Length: 172
Image 1: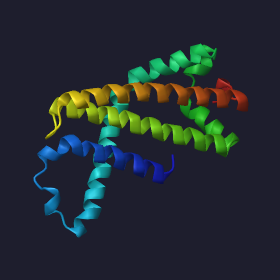
Image 2 (image 1 turned 90 degrees about the vertical axis):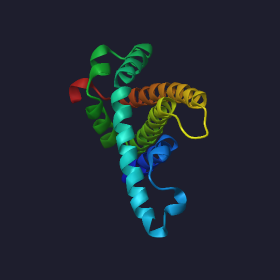
Image 3 (image 1 turned 180 degrees about the vertical axis):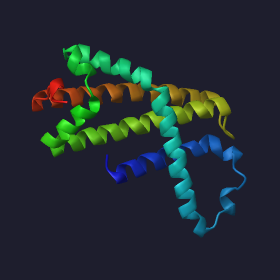
């Protein structure tokens, strides 16, 4: 993943966290001055990283289930399906920069979807000023469905690309 991609992903997740964090902040937007902007951006980045870490942990088990389902569905043998995803990605990066860039873009979409899910769950649990919790619950459900879909299609693309490029689990 390129640095600009991660920067945007974490800023998006951090900014979405403002929906539920805003009520706990000691300052209002009108209290901020221009020189605060870099500090706010850095804070949003760190909050976005934290949200992504929570999302990674919370969705780890469903991610493995989705990936196993996709592998079974397209007939990838069990050894290849359970092989190191990192080794597979390194092989793809070495073999085709174009395919590696597409996989990175798909990973970015997946990361934003899972961050949106976690932020919506946090807003549902903690509430947010002027917004019914049911709205955030609906957003959480939609974000989860979108994440499941994007995770499945991203993994399908990665497995198909590895097959076409000739990756073997023993190459790891």
